[in-house]
Image 1 (cartoon, rainbow, N blue to C red):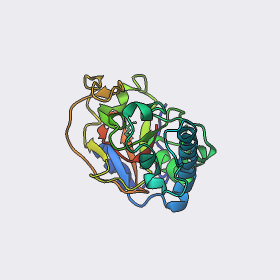
Image 2 (image 1 turned 90 degrees about the vertical axis):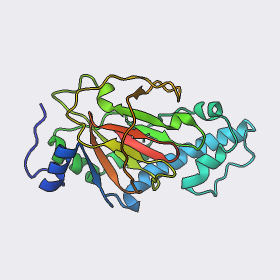
Image 3 (image 1 turned 45 degrees about the vertical axis):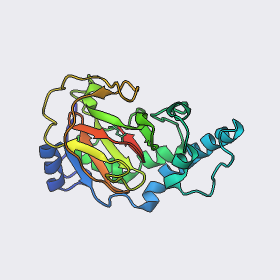
Length: 235
Ligand SMILES: O=C(O)CCC(=O)C(=O)O
């Protein structure tokens, strides 16, 4: 059974109160470049594997090894179709050591401990959601994560959302509707536009995030993600 311990974890009482009232919490400058490095190493490895396959299949001439992390994936798929990208999936759950190291970062764990108490685990349903220009399946429609976790009641689940590059209105950022966490699960349907079958509710609000920020979301808080960038979502 979920039980918070006063004083446990790293968040201040004000941050915890904000989370409880608003249904989310943005932690500015929370993770530094060193904290992000293991996740980015994992992603670089993934993009290496994809690039090698594209070269092998004669779909690109150059694996673009010298290209920056921020742009390489998008450049590899420049001028290609949705289907060529979707062959590699839209919710990556590779078991790379860098991801494990990243998820075990005490900064993240201790923030979650403040919200959920000390008995926590990070489940394997984390998603790396690659965003590539022109690929509609990168967009995640308005939804509540509770629609994916109907049985998470006495033991709540927190979603932490971490952008791996600066996330802006232009390249896509997380949008959320504050104070919706106490609503019941709204009716939803399978998303028709992206072909992903994501659960979908209606459009509203938004929020800008930068690299190194982290957002903790309650399961019922409504949120959405637009196209273009790379993020890792831990649930
Ligand atoms: O693609 C994203 O960044 C949003 C992911 C998301 O909302 C989710 O996984 O629940």
